[in-house]
Amino acid sequence: MKDLSKAVEFLFSKLKGKRAARDYLRLKRVDRDLTNVKSGDLILDVGCGLALDDFLYASKGVMCNCLDLHQESLKMAKSWARYLKTENKMNFILGDALHLPFKDACFDAVVSYSAIEHLRCGYDKWIYEMARVAREGGLVVLTTSNRSWFFYPIARLYSKIRIIDFEYFFHYDEITDLLERNGLKIIAWDAEGLYVYHIFPESLYIGRILNDLLHKLEEICLRKFPCLRKICGRFGFSCIKKSNGRKMNE
Image (cartoon, rainbow, N blue to C red):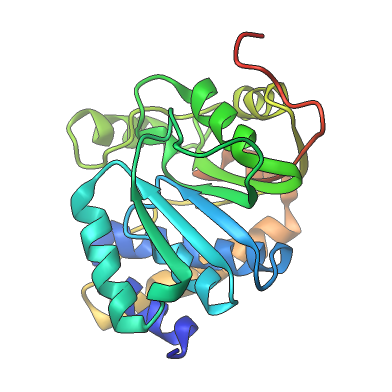
């Protein structure tokens, strides 16, 4: 197996503009989440897209099930898995996040990075399904967009004219209520994206350097002033599934 950390960073570098900057933040997020999983664990990534996050999990010996509704994304992810020699640690599944094709309590961890906001409805069912397939005491991780972000009006305009493909932005209380209602205990949360992700063009070397400096400045600001987390662009929640999981008809 190749050096996955370097390889995945290389793959991220191929995603220009806002995708590269946004996925840089996701890469750092996965680095943190890796401390909660161990070799041999079975993980499900709901709405995996290009499955970039899962290459890092695979590098730790975790068996990754990567589910998405878009065949083209899965096709590209499979080609990268062949290049990185991770086919034996990754399964690619064409499926619907609102109707996961798995039995109850079959995964050690269930994650979903920057995916739920692409729906127009069905957010409760999405989180319910994540909780349903996680084992009792298993890890459930969700990241999504924040309606209280101070750039929200601009982001919402961008989504309307399809510069970005977000359909929904969550309030903090709204998303935490959805998580807790579905039998998930929040053990930690953080935030990222204090400013517009792609101020400088990622296609230029100097643009990547400047964006990297801004990311580091953001980290310092969030450490010094934790209250700023609630006006960042994205939330990240780490949860544990409680024993009394919710039934869908409740």
